[in-house]
Image (cartoon, rainbow, N blue to C red; front, side, top):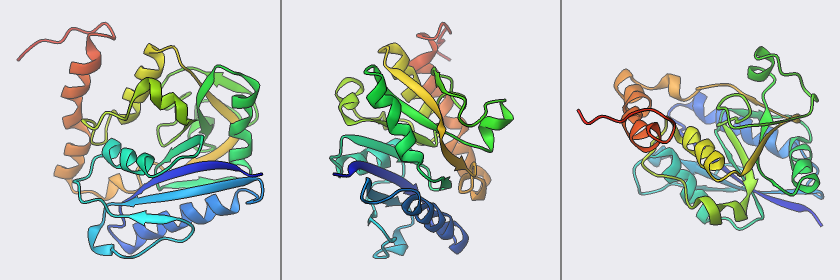
Length: 237
């Protein structure tokens, strides 16, 4: 029987070029595994409302009525799924062959592993990490934690709850890593699982004011929630 994995992908097909980014992501995902061994249940949460009722291939495309929020839209996708494993993905990803087969291995080998990220051959090699160099446990964003691709056991959500919807974009993955660390939940980078991240393909197309809203305006809430816990003082202005 195939292992089922729920895949939630956020997309913003603002242009035909960006729509193709999502299509490329899905094509690489489907080509990456034998469907008799790995079954992907795919939910694409699309932000471009006037694209409705368009459906991407291989899964279900939904167009939320709610305004965009990275964690809000991920929660919508999660609520529509039920498999024992969930993978939360940006749309600007390219999946290598057997990435899922490889990322599942530490979950069956080590009972305490509840969360993992694949390695990006573009980003991680620039840090000196080589493919097939083992597991890297830890909570550092963009090192052990690839915020663009988070893979975890569904039952972990009973401990961390739903994703904090106050994070519209920036710091969403930081919040995830701090929760794992605070609860002593084991996360690993799996260097035999390869998923390349094209890095901010959609974000870089945004107007300056929208870019600022998605990135820098999240800093205040992040510092209020985590600054004190991380040893920084929060001062009322």
